[in-house]
Length: 573
Image 1 (tube, rainbow, N blue to C red):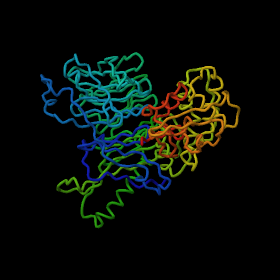
Image 2 (cartoon, helix red, strand yellow):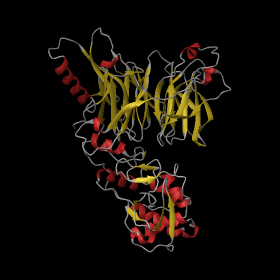
Image 3 (cartoon, one colour):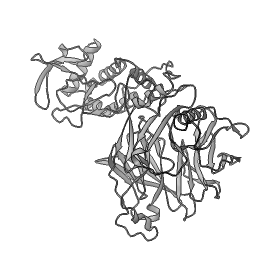
Image 4 (cartoon, rainbow, N blue to C red):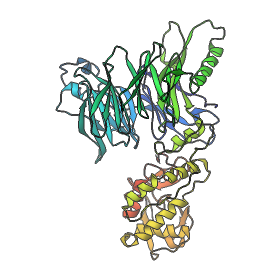
């Protein structure tokens, strides 16, 4: 399968030799460069032309990070006070929201939305070693955050929205190593947490009752990666790969003999993985004999890139060249791989920042893909192009959107937004010139009809009358003249006299564009835009001129950040 041309990260230096790349649910790539993180935002373009640069906009992502140890006296770890300028070690995107958990070089864990810090994981009454965090990972639902400290402990925190930011509260502490060991890596899949320590021991923790057991003892070989795949835990150590069945505790060891750090890349919808290093790679099957086989997934693409580079920059093979991997990231649904790499000549040379150039290779990991809840918006559009325009396997598996109208309105809208069929309809809208919302109008009208006795606000009634006229069905309310206010103007409307889904005419004859969610007129400049459809909605957080009722207010709040039509992040203008 032909792959996209690489995305280039120019004139940057990386924070570490490994683990510099993460991929979020909405398709954003985060690269831990210095002094500021590099953010590769997903963008929508009809003309991709086989180039990754048309799917991403690369920019600096500066974060104002504090240091909770700045004014403390370090009794044991004086290194903490020797780093007054915080730097980002890891960006961990939430699997369910637009939040990041930032691990800093000062051993802090800070939660952010965009570039704004809104919360911090901490227990201020404990010792500095207990408060110094060296690993972080989100739970599958994005409501829990687990961090590892310098005392061999996992700290489980709850993360939920609070007034003015996010509340991060401690729930549980689980000991997974000796008091002098650092927890340096964590993975969380389903109801299982795997953590490994600086002593290279690996521990399995139940996310239900938080009981833990050691599944691999300490050793001299460094643990470089851990993955949970099916009923197995795969542990990559220098020169060896361990397969552990966490039900029975049975361990199988595959000696690799590479003498290098390696990554584990799970292959979607199969019990297999690719083991990848700078020097070589192999494929292992988890069922049957545990042995290394040829890598037919990633290696062919790397070899092609390597040969092409040598053809251009090392034509006569006068120099030795190396392929260096500085980070890998699975797409949020696990069907694609982003690989951050550099090819260079082996020689003594100065590293001049303005001449540095890293590349991100985007690879398919199988020959088909599916729409899942783990990816949304432009992340699905990226999959579509990484798989050379291949449609998702389950797109034609249509289902009815059956949602109860007797429940709370916010729950009703949330259930619609998370429906499997709605995810498919949103993906189809990404490929259409004119996105469709007929399904949304029908469901919204049904809810309004079944709850009409609760609707008393004039703007709520105007929204439903507009909806009925657009659908050409009887309106449940009598028509009245309703006045709306904008930043500089006030207009009156007879909503029963307008059935155009895009625009409506005021009483004085002026045409106004409709809000794409509430179907009310856009008199305000406080709007948000869907970057794919260019449809605009009222930004309820900034419009203070009108008295919205519970119906329209809930509509505008639920779809304020995520586009109803495509699932993409809304843009503020």
